Length: 173
Image (cartoon, rainbow, N blue to C red; front, top):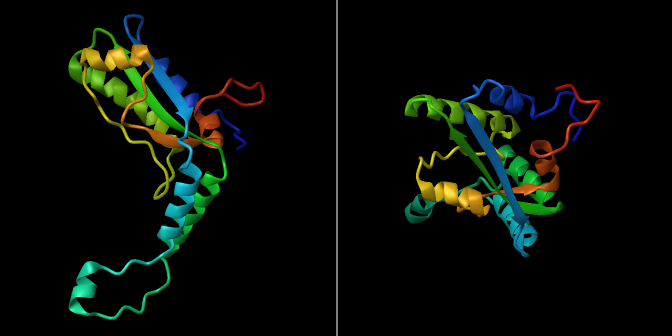
């Protein structure tokens, strides 16, 4: 996609507000999608277009005349099908904060950094979720080892280029 303003602007602006005593690290771990991901995504796309009959309606013997998928289902199905045509990667994004702030302030700083990624969300389609894991050493260990986590997002090459790219001279930051 083409951007007039660098999509990482909000992220760099948030990071620039940290003091000299604070640091934040952002780690993006990407691994190729599993072999059948494209096929599974296309299958899911087809299921989205198939209206489901509720169990309650079936038990009550109610006839359903609604055999057309909703506009939202059609939109979601098309988005999944389009995404399945591109190479995809299992992606984990970790944000680590270190500093002398109180626990509540540290959490607020983490939330502000995570919020910078929310600009990439598409309502009713694709979105990042923020999961606060706490301050246990095991999470820092995963960071150091660059381990993928159970919390992954499947991102296409097009989506990855929005969140992970080198600056370009024609884009305002």
